[in-house]
Image (cartoon, rainbow, N blue to C red; front, side, top):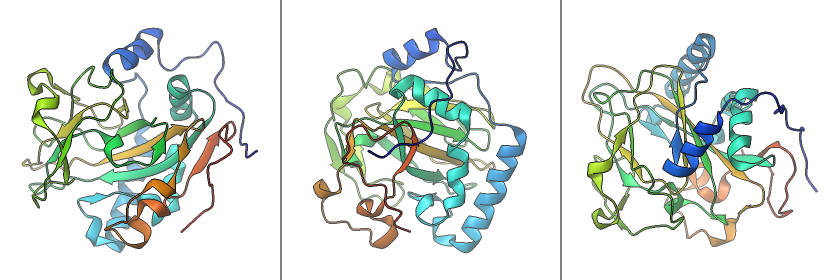
Length: 266
């Protein structure tokens, strides 16, 4: 059985309060008190700048940064981040993806309402996404918007293909599946983070401001689940961007399922 480091979560230390973990269960998201250090934020900004200089095609959005630059893995190794994820998912966790949503000044695309799990080959479906605000994330530059409680029935709702080139994703949650009037804007300062459930309905508006809105996401799954490449349809994205080619990284505990593949693909 594959295993990794023991939990560093101590009984007397909890980065999410009981009230915050309850909010995550009830609303499907939470904004912790924790903040990235200014040094870490600066390092991520510089790292991302080097990244888009090398890969300018990802100036707006890169769905799989680890397939191109494993240096981004270091931001997922922060003990505080892993402690919070452990509070949500348990002590056996794997990182299976990281994306960078850049939303450049005046041209960052709108992300339609959707559920993340519509895209992902994880069975049983379970993921906690950590969303890191590298720049201030506001209503003007396209902060994340969520529908509180939309995760509660733990099911994938109806989505429709939308090929609008002004959207960052092509699958859009059907309007009949949620009430947009209940949406909450997750306004974050630089260095703040949010956590959200895989079934939570969320999206964001385009960035029409003169301020960038860079955000780094980390996708964690419990290893009681399996990243099952066999159930993926043929990919329209070749090579590194294909979901069949994602590398999994065991961050804590062991692979409880004994079925996950931790081969490094790129």
